[in-house]
Length: 234
Image (cartoon, rainbow, N blue to C red; front, side, top):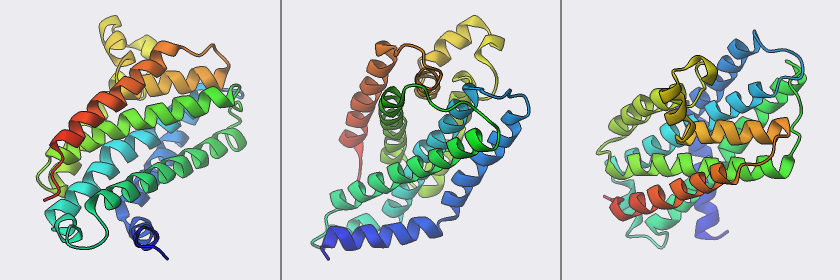
């Protein structure tokens, strides 16, 4: 097995033992149950809200907390003296977090459709595009937090504090129609707001809005680039 493969195996085991991973899996399920009380059979909003919650927790909580903790404990510095580079560790972490986001979202979708009778996705290709670009945009924000936070606890706090305003503005905590027009407009262009809307459009069969996808791609490239510029390995 290659060094990259061994690293992937070790990091997978650590992720499965991480209490934060359990938290990020259980909380979206809990919120899904709460949301489902007002949902009608064939609902298309429920899966979009659930996936937004799941990906938001992965990108804004798990990614920055894990990487900042590794830096704080000197793990990244020690890796710099081995054949496995810190860049490889970062790559493995991002792949694992993406897989975790996919698994968590798939679980939520399965529960939404089978238990709460939500509608199945109407445009699968558009859904995949929205999911990948939206996840990349949200994870880019998490990487920026990881790049600037001095400790794992600081990254955790920043991520959680950022998550709730973005979730509120993005229409996750209450319907967008019930928000003041200015806040609704601002929220529509936040990473979580863009993700929720793009996923809902694909799920309901509405026409894909290229502007939403373009903005998410821009978030991923610009914020990801800034994060890479300021990211410290030690």
